[in-house]
Amino acid sequence: MPEAAAVQRISDFSKSFGNPPRQEKLQLFNTISHFKKPRFLAQNGTFLKIIFQNPHCGAFCGACKNASEFLPLKNPIFMPVRFYLDKRKNRHGEAPIRVVWSFNGDRYQTTMGFSIPPEAWDDQESRVTPAAYNHKNTASTTINAFIESVEKAVNRLENYARTQNATLTKPIVKKVVADVIAAGGEYPYGQEKFWKKGLTERSLSKPRYFEHFKGGKYKLIGFGTDSETLEDVVIYQELYGLQKLWVRPYDIFFSKVKDENGTEVDRFKEIDL
Image (cartoon, rainbow, N blue to C red; front, side, top):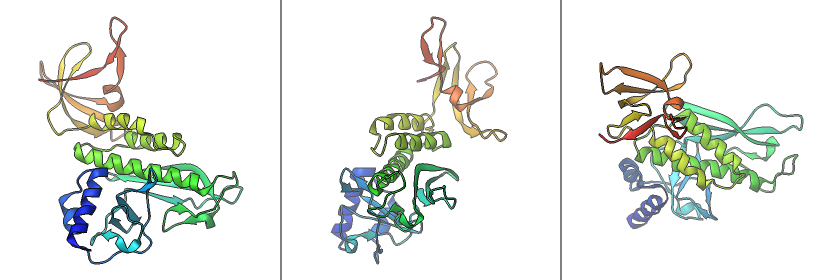
């Protein structure tokens, strides 16, 4: 593929997801072959600018419709989310579709809420085969729309986390998957602001300071996980007295409380110092 075409591919990718890392750009210019049966991810009736084939390899492309036009990477890229059929079948002889999202050495997995006949699952494409139905008469197009929405959410949130130097956690990942499934196959654009807010709360790209609703200022030190309960926690330091370090559950630190006037306020409000 000519260099100019590779440049256009990067431009297309940037418009949808932001600039790819420098190493990936170099790989784009160092392509030697292309893949078979690339998998499309739908976005408003067009093709996404990033296309992954399977857990072992991937490819970038523009709005290509011909496999010979795809621009693959010389080195593999791993899709953070994948879909597969559960080995267990229900009484209708159908297997549940499961989703697993890998992030920061952890992973979250759950069912998509659909079961299908095993022969209707295309393992290479991670999609339900065309014209297939389950016992509830749910069409493959409906189920695949859910899968595509989850993939889209993963791509957008992973990219946002990188640009904000934020860390994905299981509560955020769990909420994203739940919101997408609850949206009924439509992409929940309205929920993105809440996902991003959850990520922004974890950003450590610059010093951050907070004030407790009863007074007292604190510096955010970082985030951690309770070794006993595996609960997410916030580590912060008081900016008065002995400047002690404190640990508080993440959900409590960023929660709402009522002040002495009965007004709902942030338990810890972020401030500038």
